[in-house]
Image (cartoon, rainbow, N blue to C red; front, side):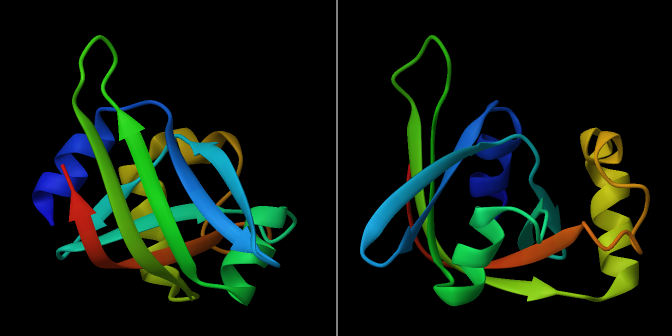
Length: 121
């Protein structure tokens, strides 16, 4: 997992692609973290991307390193986690999220664990 994380943590933004009603949607994300060999991203339940991941948890992450031809495509299944100590850890590892979410109890803060099904570097 670390190769995926090492690539994505240095790329801003990377894109999370979802699908709803067979229509693809892509959005820039700026924070990802790895905890015990698992990847995590965060969003708000108010956002459409949250609703799409809940309805269809199959996602793709794509990114390219600026000034290079190095790219990554990661297919994963996104599962929301409500484990408060884990959400607190995500906030501590991704300080940029603190601009948007007060703490792990913030009702607008949702964390998704990504189960990687394939990756191309």
